[in-house]
Image (cartoon, rainbow, N blue to C red; front, side):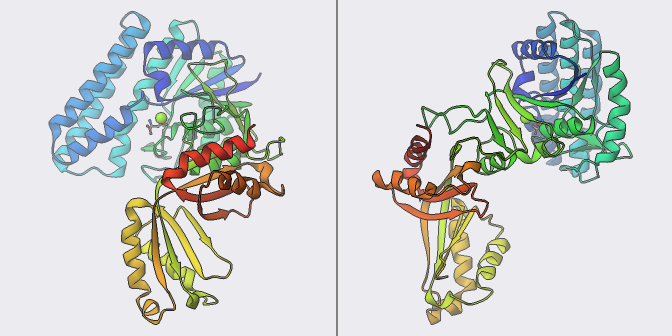
Length: 462
Ligand code: ASP
Ligand code: MG
């Protein structure tokens, strides 16, 4: 029998109408089904806020938040079912009591460790799973809510725990196989897990996708479906490019490149366990379930397209360290990057001319001045000797990236990109291409960003 893991994100479980859709989707999926759920949208943020308030000694705000969340979930399940389910209400009451106690301890100690925070935020998923299970049962699908504690086993890196694959596989088959055999749909909490000792952990923000991928791999699922509120990954941001189209399929590497540039449908790293296990990952829309969505696979075959998607990242600054005295000096680039690391500035893009006369770094705009000053201190002597001529800043700039496996080994792609921009008199400030040839990134002034995206998209998607 085919086995499908269906993961539903925060907006998919946050309203009675959405829960109805979820129930229909699960019902219409054949074979064995394992459901993984996020907390309702906004709940995890609210819980973190409550923990921070408690840590600052504001027990009242923390208490108000948890009571509000409790009320919202009680209303949600009542509205979704049309009656009050005593079981679910009891579950909500128990979880609320436990979390209130945790928040009170935090307020007294004025300390919230990563371990405590994980216990507090687990409320979100632990409360959504019984709600989803109740709706499934009510609509004729036998279901049972399960906490991933004791099921998805992790190390003790609280806040960003790492799943332990073998242990999880053993527990998952023990807990899930029999239920599936009886025709029950397990509804498992995403995002959370536990150590081998049973201490609650979380996998990091947005971690429910990761949970779903780990469970799909551990249970040898045939298919992982990630239901969200958009119909997959688009060829460009539809707010910028009118003709943007949903992508039917993409490779893991393409998805990784795109997400780096802020296409935030999923964080591909989180679905890697499924991709590595050869399980196709489909990104689908709960609110338009017959849309085809996007399938992410490990397959890197070219599909005839050259540039598959065009994306951009704004709010950046570019720093150029330039001077004739830099070329051929070993360790020069290392000093540039050490300076960035010491300033805790993340570098989004690098390019160096082959004459080695200049290195440029693209960094978040608000870090530009700080990094420039730090570089001036670092290269003070070289600046005095004119080995480094200047450290220049250009801002605000944006990176525009064209991504696609089909670019590899296809001559003339860069030329087409530059011609398209050149015709419209858009100045390209810097360029970089990864040696994987999967991505050409250019730096343009922020004001040219959207136009550049449109022109490149138009060039390759006519
Ligand atoms: N609820 C968690 C978060 O908001 C996990 C998830 O939604 O994937 O980060
Ligand atoms: Mg989420």
